[in-house]
Image (cartoon, rainbow, N blue to C red):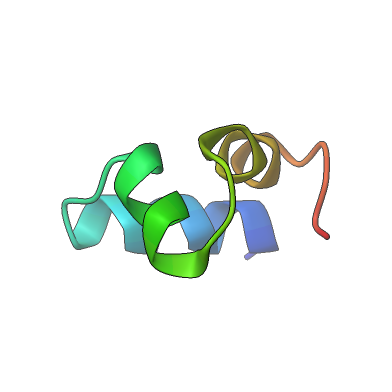
Length: 42
């Protein structure tokens, strides 16, 4: 399982939006979106 798949699976499992996850890990919603699409993992 790739990192992007794990992030998406866990985020949806816990019922979090990209915005909510971003707030919890102190990044932008756009960063979460990039992680989930595999564009960026940093």
